[in-house]
Length: 187
Image (cartoon, rainbow, N blue to C red):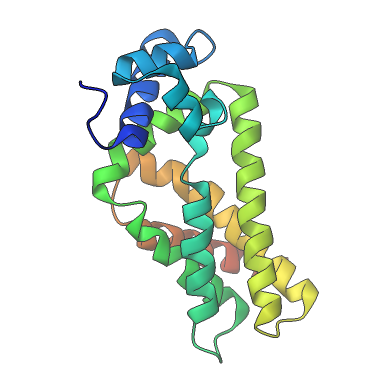
């Protein structure tokens, strides 16, 4: 591939996932990723701080999409209903075109404790952002924290289901929230 072709970020992400799958995450270097993508190593570092970020780059987009939908939820919506609206909005990111990449990405993450830790940290950032938006909607702090953490748990449980079975992300995450609501009634 020529260096001037557009889509460097996507090419780097695809190349990284291919190499992580073929050779292992620890054994793959940023230089190898750039080479596979047909780019210079310096281009890699213009797009990503390190090779971990290739796997976690879409996280800020996820936070933006989810929090915008939580904020835009019906004003009278219960906090958990607003969270569900936000998580359903992520269907635009967790779509059939991204399913294969997301499933392969998850296999790499699951195989490495430091990547699983990073994944949990990123989900914590999502929960914090949701909590902030809920508080901005007038939800008391404890209720906002609980709704945000239930959203965090729903994503944590729904994502492996979605990557293994496909289907509609919104339905998958909504089913997890429904199960969590039912589980809470037994507490």
